[in-house]
Image: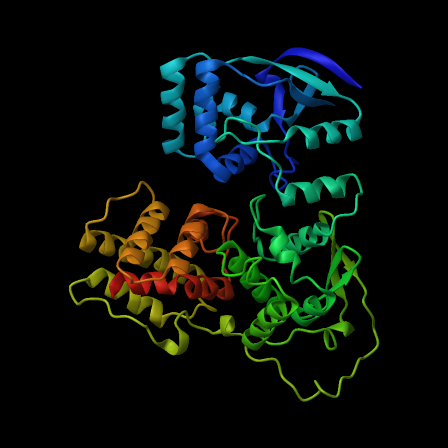
Length: 449
């Protein structure tokens, strides 16, 4: 049964680092950044509404844990977006960048009327709390109302209460992608589209086995990662959709295409080395078998060389576009990139590539008199929009750029290169750099042609 708690100080409320709507986060700052990344416009609208009209919802739901500054730590189980908005109104410096900090300062200065404490309801029974959370998410109202849980969040809920849900195995598939290659997927990811190709046979061809809801790696990990990265990218960019994968034949054709490009990654050779089982939020080592398995149809068959393993950024050392002679800096950077091996100098190539993409974007903006965005990602999106309008790229390519640059966690977002340059924890390998170029080359080419 719930126990009423009134007027808990916002300073004593902590965001839920395991909120079903977002991936597990390290701390409250990570929660704030992730919630803003999902839709900063909605949070700004919500903050302005709260500052202007007060907190106009039923009680915030909390659960209690020990260890807070006042002896108790109240975890926000429902209302994380609202508490995030209030925390940013109270202290705009908590926003992850100056642009957002300035926007929250402006709202704070204009209204200066936001709560410092909020009415909360504590639930002591976890199952009852989860049931209440599930029933409360009904409509968005442009960010001011509560947002309905997507398929991803519902699958996490089913997993928590041990309820059957076919999307749980998709969660585990995405967890493998995150743990192996840091590929993020938020609640808006089309999890039901991915489910369409996750049959036992299809998974087996790309390097995985399926045991219940557990995903077990049995093929070559690097090839599996390249295929998984491609699948997730195709779904994010809507190249692969529920419509294009709506029949068994369509699904088989899609897997055929992947295997033709990256190679069959099925189990026979891998069965000798075991596999990595992904279950819940943990990766566990699972022995798949020790005996040799001989398949006469695959004994003499070699896996095609993965194009991402090439030693240099450009395929066969060739550049598919020309930089004008008066663009000396761009030409010099391009020449240096061409001279370097990505497998030997990945950080240097990443730094040069980031500079070259920025120069390419600025060149296109200047030549086409495009209004500037505030960030390089916004500038790239504006350029892609213009490129589509003059038929330099097609609609699908424009959508790809928009989705990539709208999600800082996407492996092809410009922030990936930024982290390679500036973040102490981020070290690129040559496959990642090559993958980045393969995904963005069409845009850079359009800047110069």
